[in-house]
Image (cartoon, rainbow, N blue to C red; front, side):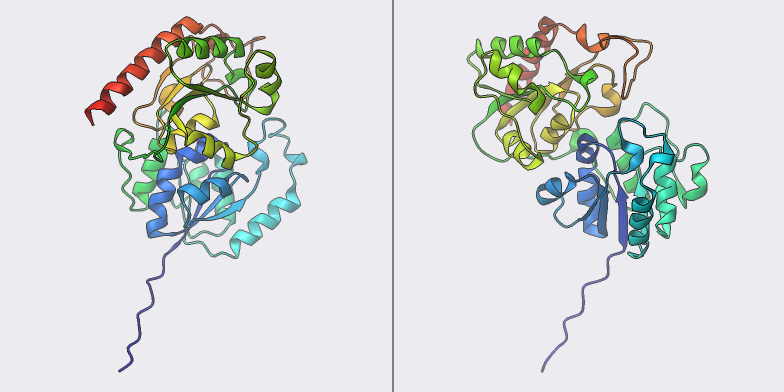
Length: 337
């Protein structure tokens, strides 16, 4: 006798907005992984979301878009926005008939956009009366870490995300080395390259294997300063491959550091204008050195001074001392496991 196999239950459709940087998308990964078990997830993000999807949340659908309000320059010149493209994107999303939409940012533009997509339930943190466009608004007070924002949005959706200190982020087995990445999307977040070089020399003098990686704009400097094997990843997939070889990651407050964390690699971050309690990489064993005090911190896209003193006044000696402690602690904890 033939029996009919019941169809799998329909998953509600969830639209997730994370329109900003690589690091922001990396910190959203535990949420996306949890959400994919309960929802049919569509993530609206920049192009590199495809590279993260393959590794971290393969069940999610990716729609890529560079939203005009996330540009580094002229984001507030709304008369220059690509309104036809914006309208076309919104209309396409309306056709998806989303049951839910969520943004973990205090961004009224996200909230208006979610409302325009026609999503029936819209979750977010209201700002400037943007709660008018949300069906469930969650108030939050700074400073709060970005992961905690996603954790609270998850709770509204019935998802239970672990505490950050309890995240399970596993490394791919293999040989391990220290990867120092000297790049960042913004110049005011780049610690001086000559200090990174001195830090690498310090670690190599301890017989530690160190690999240097950098942005394409920094490659010539490293080649001219005696680093012939410097690695410059051409895309996020190549960067993930590099980070999979890392025992630890050392670098700036940047996307590669956040990506290293979700690859399971403990990170040491040299902070400048940002606040670690808001945006440190989410690996439970990650550490950092905080930038020097400044009355204007936290800064975002620009600095009021000719150089970001909060970062440039952090010496290589200070960093070397804390990196040594960081490595010693990792050796102790991993020996005990």
